[in-house]
Image 1: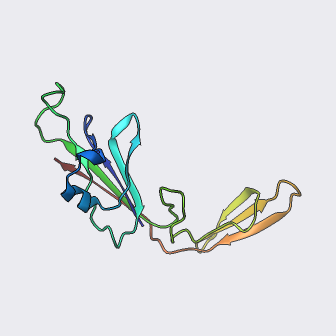
Image 2: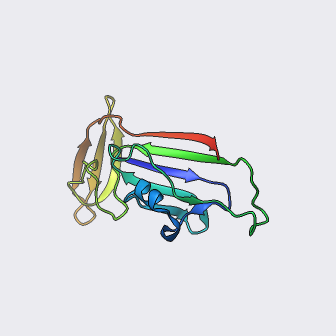
Image 3: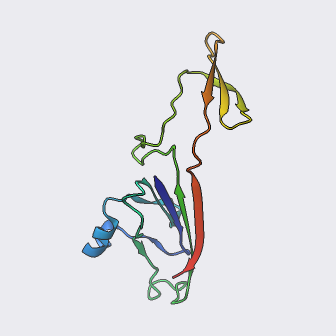
Length: 154
């Protein structure tokens, strides 16, 4: 599974779907882009998405118009791109990806976490109703998560 973040200069933002050309709509397919938060329209996120299907992602963005925005200029602007791949992600609609392989077998409060010498963890989960404790072993897994970033100019 992959995810990505694009940090653009102030004034740049995610293009609304009614402004996308048919060619752009074809490039982005069914990807769901969103602004990081309403006050940060220049930060765009996407994912998680299947990495085998989306090895390249085209972000639909709008640049500020110098004719209507006096702070916008025709310059080279730095942009920052980050990508993440890994396991344990959920889809934007809340459903699990095929990478979420661990589910708790007990309910309660995690009262102790021990990192095992050869990898993995030992969790102690305490039930608040009867103080019963369950020890849950998380084995070491493949190190499949990574984060990449870069700085580019547009």
